[in-house]
Image 1: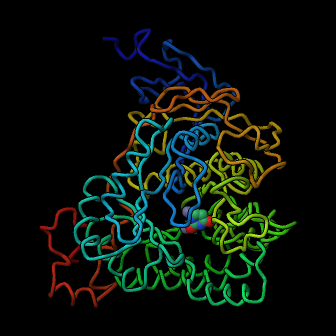
Image 2 (image 1 turned 180 degrees about the vertical axis):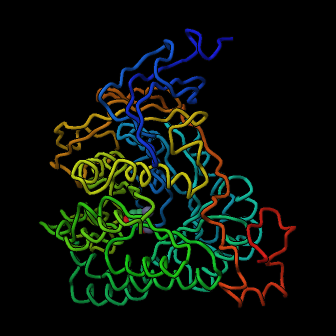
Length: 508
Ligand code: DUC
Ligand code: ZN
Ligand code: ZN
């Protein structure tokens, strides 16, 4: 056995690294052994493999905590990326952990959905992955039995929807789910758009023949997102339970979130590249051209982009994810199920973005002076790892953590071309855009999975990650003060039952 300081002690040494974590910047060599970081010091002895990072940033690998891969759909559409192509694309863009969704369809068991998703992922991923769940059918057996058991097994976060007919929950069901999250220690992600507001508008637009992609955005206006965001916050406040609002698009929802955070509620928020780099004008163009950029909530306008930048800068947002939802523009299962005249409400929602997420934010955020390097790491890696129970194994560079790292090329000029990307989608919404940063090398548990423009990983080398109960999902300590109505309830049921396995509630 090699001693730590003897030659050959390390499988890999990354030399002369300028490391940034969410908190610090420091110069060091990085010794990797058995896929983990074993030493951080200058002048480490030679490793079996050496990489010189002189002059380059070395950052924790990205954690993309919101992406859809090979997810079942209820409408005949087919996701273009499976675990193989999706994780390949992620690795080539500097992401080393993905958290896609095991989706329950109505009438289906949640546990079965998780088992089915494992069968889809097994042996396919090139980087490590965990699962969120999607709870679409919040029956008593799901919220009282399946969810607690799954949380115990390491599936500690789930997404619920306030829109989409085949996924949405009503307010009562949302409360049932939040109650389970509170009692058992899971993070609830909420897609906050008002189903009825959208349906009312969309039905009238379609009746008048207004069915092209721009009407997708007009039928899902900021007020529909704002109303649902406020309602989600209110439901979370009623149960004094943390939630995370996903894919926030602009100032109306941001104001609600900021207001709630200022009131002391544990409301977390995520935004995505499409809300910084696209606007509703990208849904225009001939025939279905704009269908490429149909996603929900839709991109807004330039003022909204600025509000999102502000929210990233002032800490309203904790997470920056891709919401990669890959549908091909041409071909079966894609954006045009009814050909060139497909009405907007039949276009599958979502855009690709796994590979471009980090380069876009590094370029326009860090290199343009809108955020510092520590905030970039926090938003794209550390905070998602914390919010979903993967920290410190993922999300930082420290002794004992997985050696997931990215050595960055910066000060370059690279034009984004779909032909250079590694996903299985036939377009990128960012075609022709220039970035000044791109990963030079991506390391997954010390293995090179991307270097010098070439994918070097292998399907099957990515491992499934069981998630801990996330500390940020813990309710506030003083229930009696924050939510006295719950203290009353606790006398009637097992709300603060200390004997409940995994209960993170409190009797304060
Ligand atoms: N909206 C979602 O809610 N999920 C996937 C893609 C999208 O646009
Ligand atoms: Zn969503
Ligand atoms: Zn999504």
